[in-house]
Length: 154
Image (cartoon, rainbow, N blue to C red):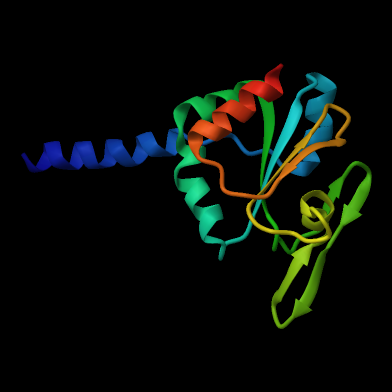
């Protein structure tokens, strides 16, 4: 009985790991676009944002969403407080400190600012030429996100 419990427990942990979208880096996107043109969906979040964490635990663990993101789009999971330099679209973006060990990345500001402010979480959609075609800065339930993905495929 104990072995059966352990098997089910570990299988459950492994199964949840497979139900996540493959995240690409910004540096990979240019090369991937050369191979196959796709829209890019960027999820801009922070570690402290409760709605961001809820989307990670619900929306991005939905198997239908994961399947669509992996097969029809390029997906980037981007922490807005990333400290490393990122090269994207032949430009280098840097972390901009705003206090003691706090700040925001220039690329998050570039892609996530709506009406002169950034509110997390942000979904930014780029076309095949890496131009912004959609920005949305609210929590999206799985049902609503699926609807958005279907519209973006058209």
